[in-house]
Image (cartoon, rainbow, N blue to C red; front, side):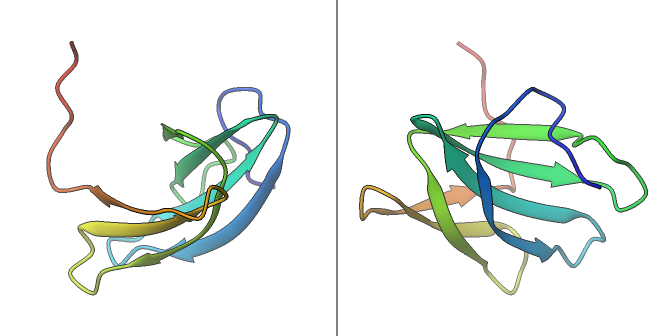
Length: 88
């Protein structure tokens, strides 16, 4: 069973394999949303990206660097996985 490393109550709406061999899921609940990333052999996610609200589905660009996420607020947002975000 796959679990986020942080406690989360909600629904994972979409799950897919990334070409580099890890799993990605998007979901939401309780007013928030997240993208989770797992190595297939591990139960707990290795990374979580908090979203502004629930993610309902996503599609991965064929190059594997961009995610298009459909949000519950009827907005489509793009997330670039090619660079590490700077912390402020």
